[in-house]
Image: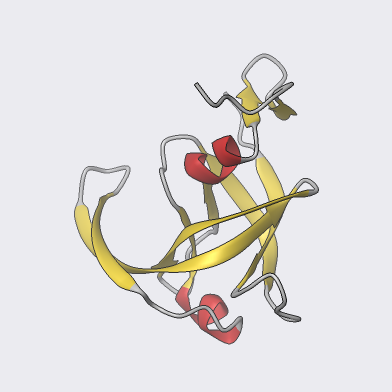
Length: 120
């Protein structure tokens, strides 16, 4: 399947005037989203914890994470954002996608809205 990217803005709160906006790689293999640490800190997003994550190559790494407001495709949610290396490509994880009812359409290689967000 081809690569899918979407413009995402991360902010420390809904009221925050500044944030970090970039083209994020949509990664359904990633649970949480990730962005460069320096950009998250500039946006006022702070570390609230650490977790061990398994990378695509199988390596286990510990990263700080914060909680951010996540806006994309006219939708808004919030969730964990991993503080990645300063040169990392931003990643939008599956938790953010599913929380607003957006799925990947593998045939068209695009994102599509579900008619409703499942509560079952």
